[in-house]
Length: 494
Image (cartoon, rainbow, N blue to C red; front, side):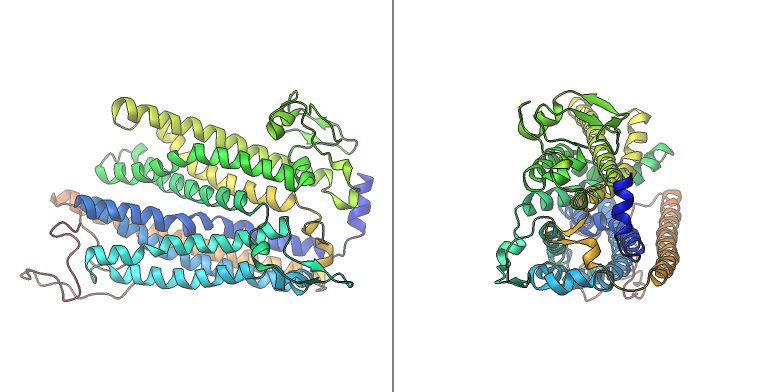
């Protein structure tokens, strides 16, 4: 505890509010990222099913999901823009010195962002204005643009964790930058695929969870069944894949960032036959309080044998490693992530067993209760993943090259605390507006569905494009659609 206090006394006063401000905005923005990365793919998957099978219900779902996708993208613009400004305002030391080395990643993300905005606009405008298959194929690049944005962000973050692609001159400034090496760092592949699959898995479980709640409330129609089945199937297939990718990513950290791995596993002294602690708290003397101790398991997980040597936190000076509190936070985040991942595998196996045996969804209400909770649990794992990545790297902002305290702004601490308060108020308003819009859309759609059910009519897409140009009602006698394309509900284009 004394060493921790000594370390904190050496840090500038503006460091704590700067970190709190960055942590709050990042934690808020990351909740939207799964939908920005994966919802376009899930929507197009449903859209493709609608066109291939002439399925009006699937088309209705795809169109409604596209409206949610547009609203989510708009909110993501706000939170993402704030993060972009904060990088320059809060951490000028990092960008001023290292921006030329790893800045390409942010450039790729910005380019992908604008491309995604254009493609979303085309997709929304294309409903009832383009031929069905033309409309679909014009939207196919949308998920690729989302993946490109993720590529840029992860390239920048992985460089901060394993910096390379430069050499230092006599003044310690980076020169002779190799862009390819700066983008494709040693940990980039493991981090990128782990992140991308996590986004798809999370979006799938969250979307399916909405319809699981409807199922539990007695809405057992085909609309809720299909709305649940497609995204849940995507998530269930990816769950065991993600578990293996997570294991691979942790092993990459073991080799490339041994001190971060020591924090993740609260390993104090370098040794072999290291036990695994499930949860627990690291004390200042290296002992662990609480938790479940499993002998030798940490060495086995790291190197597949008990004799594997695991580097401990004491290998480096206290000023160059996470504090005991930070290590405990990282350890808990990592264990929560692994625990939820293991439970999701059981849920996916339950789903697979029922489908293979009965060709039907599980009949137990407990399954749908678990499915409804799975989406929220995945959002928790997303937060835990970024806590592990960022807190585990402390005190470095550029691993082994620049500390966070060296990069922070010289703005007064009081101003930063005030800025944090303003951002919290703005974000509460923004996310409250987002929730209000989604609930209003849900209510409108439910009223429309109840009206169709009462009249006995078949489901049909909404008359107008969500958040796009409004169209004039078609004459009842019209035997064909407007001169802009075919009616998506006719002739095999549903």
